[in-house]
Image 1 (cartoon, rainbow, N blue to C red):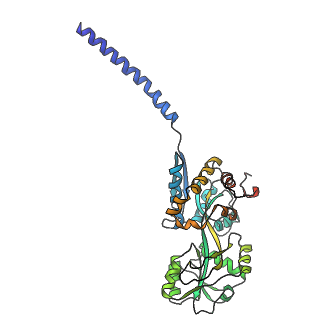
Image 2: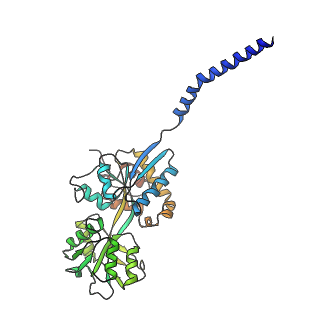
Image 3: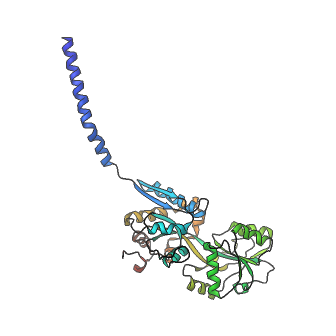
Length: 334
């Protein structure tokens, strides 16, 4: 009698186990079907250690925190200008960029022989102010005084040195340009081996503060006409001002021009996803600023200064918050 009961129990257990084994794949399949698919994006940044690289990392962390199932891989690249060709080929979804880089890419200048158009603006990242400075006792008091003077402008072929060459050409000024790394240029200023230096980057710039420890320094301004001439020749450089007291030796506002470091996006990304990317960044701006204080120089209306077409998803968000993006500024498939 006991033997029969044991057999019955064993059979029942085997039937139960078989039923579980048969049903298990369907349970797993249902769970897999219910799990949303990961959205995987690649983001070209710049060389590690640069501000734009760190900013791209901050953005990726912020986006992944607030957009479920988003996965972004931030890639170190040779620089923002190295991001245009891969994005144009569809190999990058997002990229650190600049409005000057956008202009050069769209016109086939400097780093590309072909006109590149397969990219859109997503957002401004920070401003790059042009700082022209010399010694406090120098007779140089404006850009017109730079004719024939030795002027350090950074590394040959770099975006900042190209900006200064274009600006001087627009103004009809012919300095003797001195090319070097920014660090070497600052040492030349401290040793008075150059007459002046012009450099474009975020403010306050540590290099200029360093130069002021070895020499008494003064910034010199552009006239309104000079600002306009440069903007006409290089639309990505817009009139702006370095606020008084940005540097300890600077007691008044300095008229200059500025450009933007930016973030670009691949046109093929879905409008609703790009809309969410914009929304998250601006609605959690306090977190972005905490990790990247240099972003304080830009606001949503600065989208109107972008030279690349604006992604439709981004345009939708900016219009919702009151930035009047004209239709002709929005990317359209050709």
